[in-house]
Image (cartoon, rainbow, N blue to C red; front, top):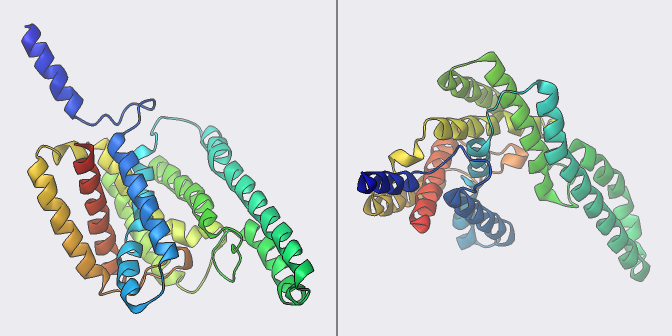
Length: 288
């Protein structure tokens, strides 16, 4: 009897627990780490003919990856919109305001110091201060609005994504239809807002919510545990998805979600999905 209980305990440990809010999910931490490394590489190595191939590959899936991982970590507990809203204000908007204020202060102070050395800079840059201050409130990476700290656009975008998902879940009970609705809104956003830039990246959020919804479905239906039984299988899947996503990403221009640049939308969706799977498989492999 004791042996049977021990075997069951060992089997349960192999499964990935999504239900605990206290214990961290190791493979997700690894996947986020990989995503951050890819962001750093993509932003700092962008010049040169050979680098463009690497940039195409990274940008084809690195932002959808963060939306999907956030969906996996999303808590589905029942709460009022008021509680949900103010919790997101505290955890997302407040950090955004702090980061933006610090970034703006550092930019202005460093600029004033430099302008003392070269007064001509003041004439060139004064026109941009209004843009920078307005950009903090608009929170969209266009017209140099967020030159003080470009990556913070993602924070307000995630705030909007979670609001969309909250309402989707209130309106629709079946998860498959939530994903279908998210797919429809993403396609509409692609066609309607390719040249229109909405505040707080609402246009990008309409696409991000698709990956967020898929991530939530992955957690709810425990899909990760269904593919993590064999280390050999993970190695094969990692190699396969890597090759596929490298090939598909080169068929599309560089994807920049923050600026509504997706190229061919079908290629974007396929490359994003396969690239995300690659990171998941690699993360699970590292965890093992």
